[in-house]
Every structure is written in C-alpha cells, then in structure tokens.
Length: 222
Ligand code: HEC
Image (cartoon, rainbow, N blue to C red; front, side):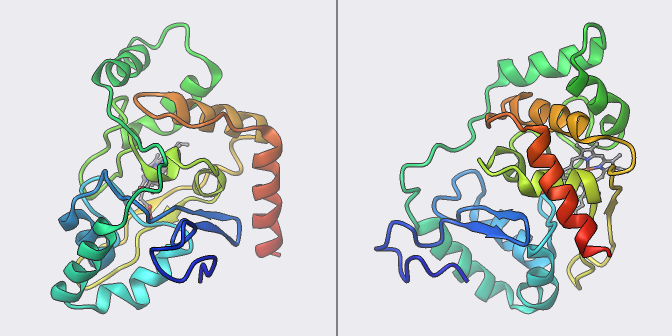
C-alpha cells in the first residue's frame, strides 16, 4: 500500500512506512537475508533468524503462505534485485556481540536495560541474542530492532506476538507481552539496550515513544 513510488525507478518505492503503529521496514536491499530465507519467511512466517509479528502476520497467514515455492522464489529473486538506496544495513561485529554476551553472562554492573533483558528475555532469546533457529528468533541483527522507527519493537515487547499456523509450519509459537510488568521508562531502557547491544546499531528509545504505542494498544483493546 506504499504508493510514494510505483516502480523501482522511484527512490521511495518499497521503502516502508508505519501502519497502525507498527514500523514497516524497507524492502530495498534485503542484504542480510538469502533468497531461501525470504522464501521461507513468506511461506511459513519464520526462517532461521526471524519470526513474523504485527501487521505482516495476516499477510503471511492469508496470502503468501498459500503461494507455491516457485512463486515465492520468483518474488525473492525480484526483492534481492532491488538496490539498497544507500541505507546502512546491519553488520555483524563478532567482538561487539561477544562483549554483550560476556557482560550478560557475568551479570555484574548491569545497566537497567541489561538487567531487564536478563530477567525477562534471556530464557528464550539467550544471553547471546541468538535465540534458537525457527523457534526463538535472533535478536542480534533482527530487522525489527535495527530499523530506525522503534514502534514495531515496542509493540512486540508490550503486547507480545505469535507466529501464524501455516501448512508449512503448523505450530503457533507465542511470545508473552510485558505491558503489565514494565513501565514506559523500563521498556525504553530495555529497547535501547536491544538496539545497541551485540552488533545492533539503532538510536535510543524514549519513554514518550513507549507511551504513544501503549496508548494505541489500550485504545485497540477498549
Ligand atoms: C517464552 C519465551 C519468550 C520470552 C520470555 C521472550 N520472547 Fe521474544 N519471542 C519469542 C517467540 C516465540 C517469538 C516469535 C513470535 C513472533 O514473532 O510471532 C519472539 C519474538 C520476539 C521479537 C521479534 C523478532 C522478529 O524476528 O521479528 C522480539 C524483538 C522479541 N521477541 C524480544 C523479546 C524481549 C525484549 C523479551 C523480554 C522482555 C522477550 N522477547 C521475551 C519468545 C519469547
């Protein structure tokens, strides 16, 4: 539905937007996913590194999971052919990733964000942020964490998410929501840690940004 450009000649074409307070990432230059990883994600809602959440869940459940492997491959070839438009992409830095893993493992002198991660998230996503392939998505390098707009990340932390059941991946994997356990300042500190921990690189998140998403969620559930 992003109509700022109608084909790849327009600089804004498929560069993402925001929908119902979920950041929609750019599809220009998906360099960190292989063609097969794109096919797996569109066909089943998950791949070895990521799981679908938010507005994209119904696209996978009702549309792309019903496509043939051939069609999904054709789509992936096309997406991989698009140029990045000059945007920086995530780069894995083994030393930074190991430094965060070591700090969380030692569990001394932790910042508030690090402590909240260890207490609430580490059991499933692990101190390495690597998760477990096709079960718990990777957080080191996750698109939802490294995009400039943090709304999708805040949504997942507050409300949780669950993968759709598709014929290629029938099991539903739930992630719990933490809206009742953390206040806006805590979620902001946790999200800021995620965006700057391991090799991730994205701007800090403020309590006001969390408050905005929380009030949208509250309005939806009224
Ligand atoms: C009980 C296990 C469990 C716990 C605890 C947990 N998660 Fe998750 N998390 C999951 C599962 C399963 C998914 C995939 C669900 C989906 O995306 O539909 C997920 C998805 C995510 C995603 C989206 C990843 C992507 O690829 O888009 C983020 C970000 C995330 N979790 C962060 C956190 C944070 C931060 C915490 C702690 C506050 C946390 N999780 C606690 C299981 C867990």
